[in-house]
Every structure is written in structure tokens, then in C-alpha cells.
Length: 271
Ligand SMILES: C[S@@+](CC[C@H](N)C(=O)[O-])C[C@H]1O[C@@H](n2cnc3c(N)ncnc32)[C@H](O)[C@@H]1O
Image 1 (cartoon, rainbow, N blue to C red):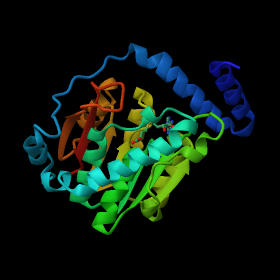
Image 2: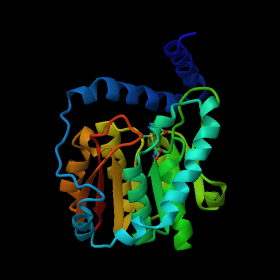
Image 3: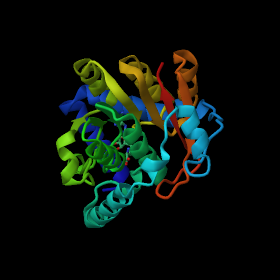
């Protein structure tokens, strides 16, 4: 059976088992294949995490350098490489879905600097960004991470979401499976407030704009909204213009794992 046909069969069966999830998956396919094709990419002045670190620090009003130099980053990276080699032979979806090291290092340094008590992220894949966020929380001695992911339809895929996350960090981690449309509103309502929200799920205009608008009101003053892949459309820029954060900065991917090396991470500090 071809993989396209198998996906279509799995998708059709989800209409019976979970009609809401089916509808969200279908509308994301339409967004990605049709609506977003008509949207221009957005230009930003982007900074390099190493070469332009002083400017990034000045914009965000915190020092990140000492945290970027911590040995935890390379130790976690080594653990993830080893674990990725173990799961590669039976990995149900590509390991390349994982975030590149720019996002991972940025997440780590930001979590070390801002010391969030509660963080929510959408988009987990094998759990690369989650691992670095949790590693920072572990060193901070505080913080919990709620991750939202709609696993791929492939059989057995759900159990691999977050599979890279080291056991030692898992007591700070809760995974919520399902589309962000379905899972995020009740989760945010239950949490009441978040210190950092990060988007790295479905990068369509409609989904990005929607996630920012739903999560934004829950982010504390001085808290952050981080979004990966902001250059794909105007959602991040429009959100910045309408919510007027205290500070914001764009960091360029240098790329070692993702195919789209031109993309960027947006970071905003809420006023
Ligand atoms: C770019 S990957 C996330 C990478 C991850 N942050 C990391 O560091 O490795 C995107 C993830 O978003 C998930 N996803 C796609 N559409 C989604 C949706 N509508 N709601 C929630 N998760 C979604 C996919 O299952 C995939 O795991």
C-alpha cells in the first residue's frame, strides 16, 4: 500500500473515531496546500545567536551568554544523539522534524534567564526543544512544561512523541495529545497563566495567528511568546503590531537538522 493511500485510509478512519480531530487535520491540509500558497513570506531583520548575541541580549533585557556557555547544552545534545541512534531503525516519522540547535540553545538560555514556573509549547515531535527546556528547568530547580502535539497518523507514532526526552527530566513534563485547536483552550484555562508560550506546531498562517491570539492573554507581564518559523507568513508580525510587546527580537536559524535553513525564531517579551 502506498504511503499516501495509507495516510488517506488512516485519515478516513479518524472520521469515525474522532470527528473533531478529523476536521482539524483536514482544515490544516487545506491551509497548508491552498491558503498559505497565496500568502507572502515576511521579511525580518534577523540576528545570529552567536555573532549578534549582545544585540539580542540588549533587546530582551537579559544576559544569555553565561547560559549558552553551560556544559548542560552539549551534555543534553550528546544524550539526544545517542537516543536518536537507538530509535532511528524503527522511527515512525522522520527524525528531521526535530528543531535545529538554534532553537534548542535559545530555548535553553531563555529558560535559564527567565526561570519560568509554567511553560506551554505546541509541537513536540521527538522532543528536542522539550528536552532543552526541561534541562534548563532542572538546573533552575523549578518549572513545569506542558507540551501539546497532534501525533502523525502512522501506526505507533503517538508513543514516539517526546521519545528523545531523557528520563531524568520527565517528572517536570506533561504531554497533551491532540491538535492545538482542541487541546490548547482547555489547557490554558486550567493553568490560568503561563510564563512562556512557544509555538512550534503547524506553521500555517491560520494556526499560528490562532495560537498566538489564544495563548497571548495568558502570558504574564514580563513573560514571553516564542515562535519558530515566523518567516513563512505574516502571523507573527501582525501579532506583534496588535499586541505591542515590551520588546521583541528575531533570531536566524543557522540550521543543522531542518531542511528550511532560512527560517527564523521570534521572541517577544510581554508588557
Ligand atoms: C516542527 S515539529 C516540532 C519540533 C519540536 N519542537 C522539536 O524541537 O523537535 C512539529 C510538530 O507539530 C505537530 N503538529 C502538527 N500539527 C499540529 C497541530 N495542529 N496541533 C498540535 N501539534 C501539531 C507534529 O506532530 C510535529 O510533531
